[in-house]
Length: 281
Image 1 (cartoon, rainbow, N blue to C red):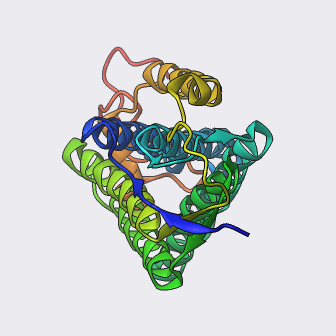
Image 2: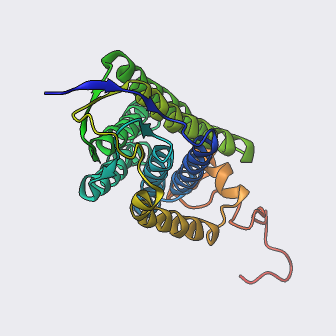
Image 3: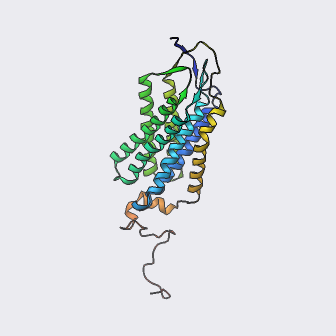
């Protein structure tokens, strides 16, 4: 059977797809890590919803980043289409695996082992989404992977995801949150392009055809994820997190035994030391 290796290109449109993909990864990560931080300010019984939204945001950001980047992927002599069932299955896997890591960080005792395990699982979720998404590609050719480069791509995802989670749960402030999101964006984007560097394509046909997956083919796969990110952004925007929330997250000793506010109330004022003359008794 005819099976000659053909040239591939990851940046057919220059840096446009790379930059857009990175920005989408940062947006998804920012929303997901923000939801995780918000969950940690709440009692254990009320964390699940925020953690689930965090997993959806990160998983959707990973998925969206991947397929925006794939708009720039060209195989010189082959046209590319996608199996939508496998494509959306990769979205489900990303949300599910990342969700395991996020819920572990949200509920397990705080410590290095929890953080390392959460980072490992979250990084593996990034890798699973990428390679399952690649499995959904359809062309008259076969993909081959360099196992060493594949392993490197997974290591990049795990290490960067662990660092991003550490920033999210350990360091306060807007700059730290932005840094965690950027690191996670680097994890997703770096893992993607490292994984793509492992790819070679062998054609099954001598017939020269298109060479890339047209935008109109990829856009249907992106509609649902983009709507999910918009929903998550609106939900997060309607629930601002106060400085008091962040302080109590970083300093658990300030929280009351029942998990509520500690010495300071939600408004940030301190309780009165004694009732004043006009106080209600």
